[in-house]
Length: 315
Ligand code: PEP
Ligand code: MG
Image (cartoon, rainbow, N blue to C red):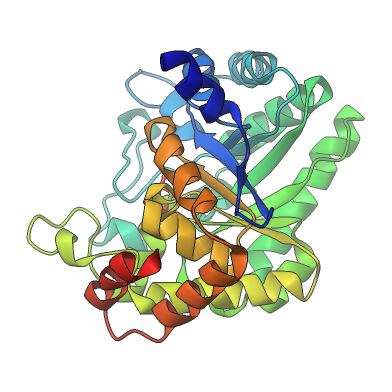
């Protein structure tokens, strides 16, 4: 029984009629890779590098970061790895960076807004990433992007570092987690290689509900049609330029969420390893056409509660 479950976990997630969705894991450290692969991950779709910076007294230097990224690639043994640059600010604070107090840190200097202001943080990270890229299929992803101007600056920085190191070209993607990025996806897609939707922040920003708010967080359901419509818009924008779209927020690991996202045309889902078996099972349970119908029905709902009620009707 256990052997059968393990074998099933390793199988790809294909709809009944054969549409495959790539299922990856959100993993922050090389030591967590083996368990993720055991759970059925086909790669790492989100490595949150801020975890290398937390609970210590100073930032990891280029060499330390390089060793960590290289160890991730080694543990993945040829499978794809998407590394997200530092996403500090918002809920994640790092005392030794001495960042100024902000009244609304989720609306402040967070993610790439910080990196673009702090070359002392961005350059060692990009150098470490490009050095690591020689050792396996690495992609770089930027968090909290909200404008095309940011994308252009980031690309230019990457190209400069790459050229200096004579490193290979690396796919460059952005998180779509600010509503502006979703609504401008058709424009942004021209300048990036892929999108990964961060449904945790996208939900927070589109519903104007702090993702950690003790009273309101339960209402911040990623399956809200307002969020789904932004994801549909992101997929349409990406398609127009032949880019792929993944989802690495919590919605990817919700079985109903995984089914709806597949129906919306998302091609990669990255999630906590423990959510992988149920998400794969959900994709395998239906034909693509049925999931497309489900996704359309969800887009037509008035609330997250209505979307959740589609679950029973699904089979
Ligand atoms: C998200 O916002 O959905 C996401 C994946 O990023 P994080 O949870 O690290 O903000
Ligand atoms: Mg986020």
